[in-house]
Length: 579
Image (cartoon, rainbow, N blue to C red; front, side, top):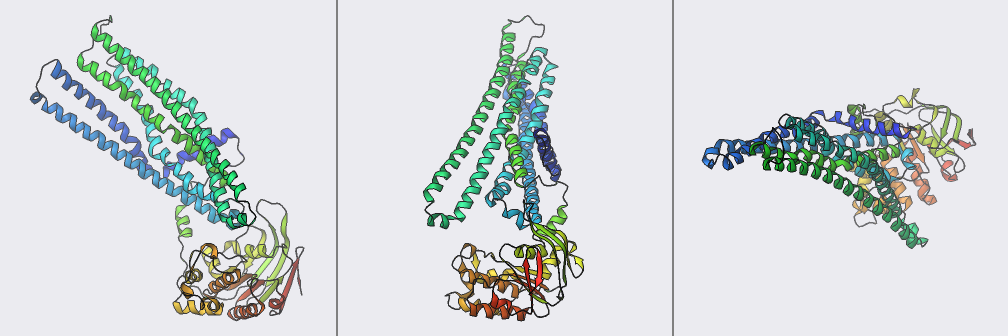
């Protein structure tokens, strides 16, 4: 269900429909969570009636405790049944909520996975993380509390009032008149609550994105003396979050005050009527006895209790709708609830066996390739055509910004494009991603190094590689040249994003990952950009040796590297020509 370019009313309607549609992921627990309060309401009526009978027996009939053992036992039994039912309903609501949140996060992660790295590059990572973790968590109260409570608040007060109306018309009418006033005023307050929640969540996302971005670029800020200016701006963002939080709390207090006012008014009206009836001040043919009067008096606050619960959790509805709208904005639409979860599980949990596929060199053909950057209509590449035969090694040169990196990313499906890219005469979009990743390997200009040891970072290339394979890959990639000087060698622990290593050393680790794989098509983007000439030539010779009987396309600005290749192309102004 994609929600784009809709009017506000349509969006609000779609958000509500999407939230209700999430219930299908856990129908049975949700049914139990909704049914439990209704069943407990039946037990409550019986329990209060028995209690009124016990009190009447003691006060009016002067019975002793031994005469009331049966009623007391029934009362205690109903009490246990009622709270057991409530407990089961709460547990079912929690289970349903956790299950729904799991499915939402899975859908959102699949959206990120499916959109690819180009989609995430133009978005704030802190906002994406906050939406998947924090804003999905906001939906918890909506499913575990609000939905069961709101159905409870709609059904029980009306049923209770009609039940009382059968015994006493005046009390029943008093209740039926005051009960609708509470939802009416709650709805009016709810409009402000939803807007306040949206503002609060926007402030929270803004702070998350801002803080993550500034922490990532802290070194740059310190070098340019921008710490104080950024701290002032951070204070402004935090103040915005503080004010939006207080706005939400103000509305919560107002809604509670409105509910308590009308609930107290209703209970007081019933109590006044019962009191005047007992004192004989009312000319009524329906004179109450202690048992019925006490029963009505005890039932009056219980009739308003579901409405109190609804008021308590009413902000959960506003927060859930605001969180859903924020997710919609960040992810360019809400995820499709009809998505096949079996397919998602296979994609997200797919483990590749690097030994199961016999590698052969690949023929690469590109026809009429047009490529734009995300969110930009200007062409990076237009009408590109090329053919690389199986086993050929090709060096691609050209000025910076002409689209060489984008071309490599499009070949392995990391960038959207128009036209046709075929591998062994099969459209690359038709290749199962598992085999496309197995048969191709792209090493970019800025490879990512994770926190962990150097060995663990190399093993990302093939988690099933042996220690001998690891050492062989580290040797060929010249990683051992610098790890032999480290105290812990390959077991040296790296900081975030390779902190502690030079860019050239990080580049060699990424090449070591390549040597642990057995791809048929190798795509390299400036693999020796940060190396000295001697190390550069040693590494490129190892790459060429490894790439025997494989198809290799390498992008470089290095004259020394390009001279190692007999086939050299030059890309400029959307034209590829031989050198």
